[in-house]
Each structure stands twice: as C-alpha cells, then as structure tokens.
Image 1 (tube, rainbow, N blue to C red):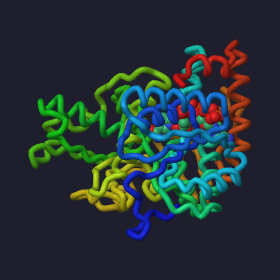
Image 2: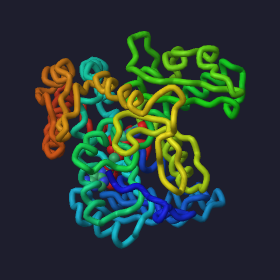
Image 3: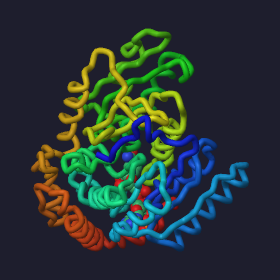
Image 4: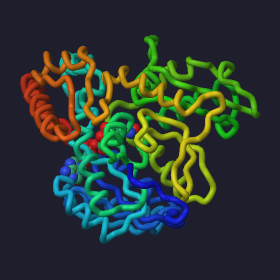
Length: 396
Ligand SMILES: NC(=O)c1ccc[n+]([C@@H]2O[C@H](COP(=O)([O-])OP(=O)(O)OC[C@H]3O[C@@H](n4cnc5c(N)ncnc54)[C@H](OP(=O)(O)O)[C@@H]3O)[C@@H](O)[C@H]2O)c1
C-alpha cells in the first residue's frame, strides 16, 4: 500500500487536494470541497479539458457566490500516460489524491430497455471489475514512480479493487463511500425508530459493497455477512432500533448518477476528518487494502481501523472476505488474480458474448475495452446508442 503518514509526515492543516477524474462523482466532490473551509487549494486533473475548465469555473463561481474563496485549478491529464501524473504530482505536491477515474460508470446498463437491463442485472457487480481496476492500477503505479508520500483515496469499487492492488503492493490508503453510505442510512433509520436526534446515535458497521443495494432497495433475501452495533445513551440499542431490519428496510434513492451526492458527502466527511487534529469516527472501504468496509478513525495523523468491542480484526476481515461472493467474486488469489462466480460469468457470456472467468490485474485494460465494446454492441441490437444516452443522463 501507499505509505500512510506517520507522525513525521502529518497532513498540514489545510491540505492540498488533487482530484483525478472529473466525471459525475468527481464533480459532486469538487462542488462540496469548494465549500469546505478546512481544505487547501484544489487541483482537478482529468482528460477532457473543455469540460474540466467549465466544471472548475462552475465550482469556483458557485463557491465564491456562497462566500468561499477556495483556490481551484484544472490540469489536463490522461491516466493512460502515467508519467504525466507522476510529473504533475511531483510538481504540485498534493497532500491528498482522490481518484474517481474509471473507464465506465456503474449505472450505464440501466440506460438499456427494461428487458436488456434486467438481463444484465442478473450478474452481480463484481464481473464489471475490469472497468474499475485498470485506471486505479495506473494511478497507484504513477504515485509510486513519483515517490508520493501523501494520502491516496479511491472511489472505483474499492472493496475489491483495492484488495486486489494490495496483493501486488499497490493498495491506496483507503477507499471512499459504500460502507459509509450504508452506515448513514442505518443512522437515519435507527434515530427515527428510537425517536432520537441523529447526534445521540452512534453506528458501528463492518460491511462490504455487496450490501449496498439491499440496504437501499430493500431485500428479504439472505444478506451478505456484516457486523452492526447501534449505541445510544451509552447503551447497546441495536435490537431496540430495529436490528437487521435497519439494513433490510428500503430507503429509496433516485436512480443513476444522483446517488453521487451521497457518495460525495461520505468522501468529504473523510477528507474533512483528515484536516483535523482530533480523531473523527468515520466508515470507509478498503483501509490499507483490506477487503470491504470498516469503522475507522481519521485525523491529520492518518487513517486507522477503529477498535470494535467484541469483534477482532480477523473477524472483521473474515466478514468482508466472505462477502466477496455476494458481489460475484469467488476469491482473490495471492498474485491479485480474481476468480469470478460461474453464474455471473454465464450471465455476461449469454448476454454479451463476453467470457472471462478470471482477471489478472495486468489484463484489466484489455478486458475493459472488450467489455465496453460488447456492451455497446448489445445496446445497439436494442437500438440504444449507449454513449449518447449516457451524455444525456449525466449530471456533470
Ligand atoms: N465507492 C463508492 O461508494 C462509489 C459511489 C459511486 C461511484 N463510484 C465509482 O466511482 C467511479 C466514478 O464514477 P462516475 O459516476 O463519476 O463515473 P464517470 O462519470 O464516468 O466519471 C469517470 C471519469 O473518469 C475520467 N477518466 C476516464 N478515463 C480517464 C483517463 N484515462 N485519465 C483520466 N481520467 C479519466 C473521465 O474524465 P474525462 O471526462 O475528463 O475524460 C470520466 O469523466 C466509478 O468507478 C464508480 O463505480 C463509487
């Protein structure tokens, strides 16, 4: 993993932030960070300069109108030229690098007609791993080349991507989102059930990305394993608050990219914690490349696992290891190769003619290219121009 800051390399009070990849999630994070007094200058690096400059102008103007004076700049960057990132990082010396760069966003299949979308939805998220792995691998290789010593945070499917990268010594410091999104939903639901303000309720959750859709859409099926504790007034009130129903009861959200406002809120919560002297309790996926998500303590001294009363570190990791299967991942081999569940492989084979039962990290880009091409052919057969539909549906 990237070295996390020890006491000699503590984050400064107003850390310089670099956002890599300015899509829908990156744009939402930018808008929120531009209004976050604790952060220092923000540099946004992405491929599309016209879009990027406009997005940066919008964030700067909106934040200024709202009374914030954060410095925000744009730099053109293509992660397929990793030396350019290494140079940029060496020149700009960011304290926190957040990557949201991905080959293709997760909600694209939802733009297909209902029949085709339902066909693809039978495959669990893990089989789309090539789309999310390749650019994070390139990012981490470039940060290694630049001898980057700050914090590296990543958004693309961190529960699995970062666990794969850990096997080859390239794990980011931490992921963002997922478990924190579920913990937030549980907090709101528990506080309502207990008739308490959210400030009086504390949630401790160990959970994997595989639990996200059940937690928001609702489910009466077997859930992936998890650990949940709700405390209020110093008492364990997990059962009184609703127990497992806290995870199962639906909390409907808009479909598609609007959910990025929630992920961005979780991301900014973590970055804000990294700006402060005292520890803040947060949740995030993949600290130090661990699989799945955990409760953490974050401060200017870095990110570390929060101790959990009654649950050992090994038990928490085992919960998340066992959850991989619920995302269609059979296992991650010691060399980082990922073996997918046969039933999920079969869904993509039948629908797209894409047939891959395993993935080595170095294959991610080629596989992503093939998967994206076959998805577009599939969409074309249903008379959908996927890229045009995507551009029309984006929020950024
Ligand atoms: N952890 C969570 O809770 C969570 C929640 C939501 C989303 N996500 C993940 O976050 C990632 C981003 O999602 P999104 O909806 O924001 O996707 P998106 O709108 O497609 O944005 C991705 C951006 O990546 C950039 N990019 C692509 N190739 C690049 C390259 N070679 N070099 C530099 N930048 C490149 C693109 O920037 P240009 O436009 O400049 O080309 C694109 O706008 C996805 O992996 C998604 O699954 C995670």
